[in-house]
View: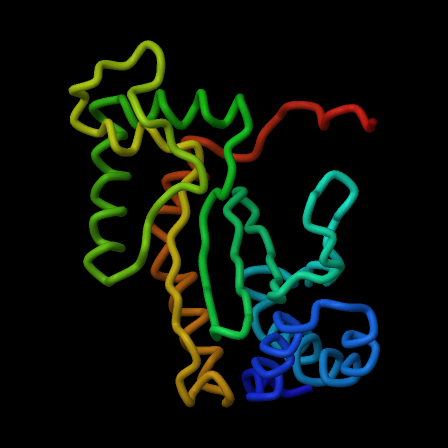
Length: 220
């Protein structure tokens, strides 16, 4: 299958789902989801697999077991892959259009320890700061899903890279919205460019943080 971006029907599908997040809506429009949302992700995976790895499309159902919100479906579709070093590559479609990002979205305890030590180090820390500054200059958002409001324990509040030390993850991305190229093959170029632009940051993270070596938690 040739990747030609996501058609307007994909965005319209999520506009409708936001208004009527029900099983009846989903079943009535499932063909649109399959053809206009999921199929383009599958086609994109074939295009990026050699450089970044195959994409895994996240399931559309929400886990509502412990949530007060019992809406059954996610109002966005997303897929991700992971590089050999541990960095993640992420792409998402919603009613608002396209989001593309890359990095380490959440650091496990052992990763966080390595991250903070490398950020604080006068030899290694400035290289990450430079990579982050370069991404922000290119108008990427560079942040953490979670961040401390103060310095982590054991680090001075006036450390020159205190903003990076407070992070509990590190990723870069951009909200592209829904320009015309989203509905054409040109979307591939923007997705891949975003992931490549994150390369210097990701290489630093792969070298100084890497995958977690902790055992997965025991199932409930």
